[in-house]
Length: 148
Image (cartoon, rainbow, N blue to C red; front, top):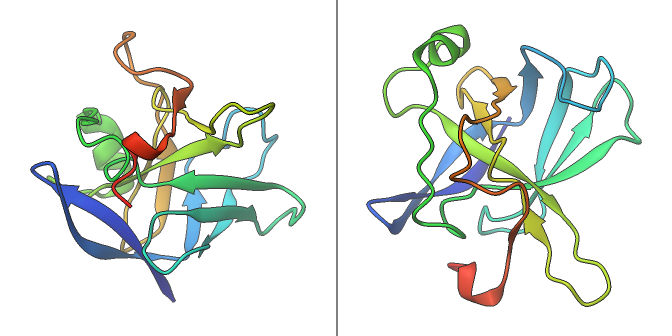
């Protein structure tokens, strides 16, 4: 099966892309022990919010979003060795970022420093920690940052 993920092209929201709902991470996600297999499930019909639940330990769940609709300027470069390991062609990766729920009246935040790169056809995935300080670990998700 697959889910539809909202993406953008040239700063405009484009038709959603089909992504397999079974993701296999080439390396465990930081802080999640040795968990590598996750199910991606849509929480809305627009392709803007998802859960990523471990199939090995179902009580482990993350919220993820495609960054493009919320942060149109977000365009990190995935290095060639990572792209090759995932079997990606140019422009083929779907990016997802982890969202942390807001607390105490603060908005939820998105981790733009470490996106997940996903091969939409195979479900092979990896979380990439980007070099430099261009993208924040906790970028606020506010009404003005949303394309919805």
